[in-house]
Length: 289
Ligand code: UTP
Image (cartoon, rainbow, N blue to C red; front, side):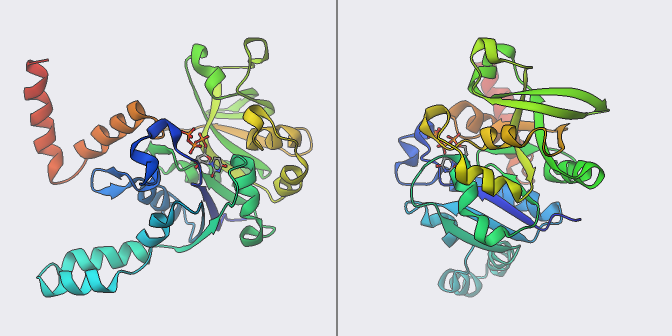
């Protein structure tokens, strides 16, 4: 079965990026000249997904507005001779069928996923976390879909992180299948030293089955008092096949300033017009550092 729907949870408070995120959702902060969330929607669309559910909150109406038409602005651009820009804005608004759903209380990532249930129904679906921007030749969600088509069940995207940092992520217990594929037997959110399985962590990409909703609904709050998606996945280990894909791609956590700046530099260097200029600027600037 092909994956037709994706959920992008984007309701988090963004405390690590304050004060910028006091009034601007981190998902619309620019990376080069596109808001961060555009890269995620493009990844989903390039993975064959047309129906996208974005989980937002009452302070994040800018996300919804970004994917709407802007008739006054488009008309102004047309009249001023910037027809191409107007067409580009229209193209982005029409890129996918986007539904924004509000998470009314910030009860955690697991709770955000549960908010999407009425729109997802019983089909398997992809999840792309708003903070994780991943640059790759083959879209990471498509890499997970390849594994899903072969093994079914659920799929998580993993990469190695330095062992001293694994307690900030989750730790995945897994055994090799072949190439970059692993069979998962347990996952632990924010492990204490004695709870670390491996230094492989789930980094922002999932294919989930609808069975996750029942588990999430009955799950007690976990780490930080939040309903944790990792706890729900762990509860399904053993009853569902769960495959880990050690995905190919460079991942940035744009939810913190360092990761955001790295993604900013990498994406700006790739930008067709400012990229060559920025390369020269950085080289010059580095001489005086
Ligand atoms: P994080 O806890 O890593 O990010 O959530 P955050 O809450 O946005 O940012 P900080 O930690 O306060 O700086 C991981 C993902 O889950 C979403 C976030 O938007 C992010 O994509 N999330 C988290 C929700 O949608 N709802 C929640 O209640 C919590």
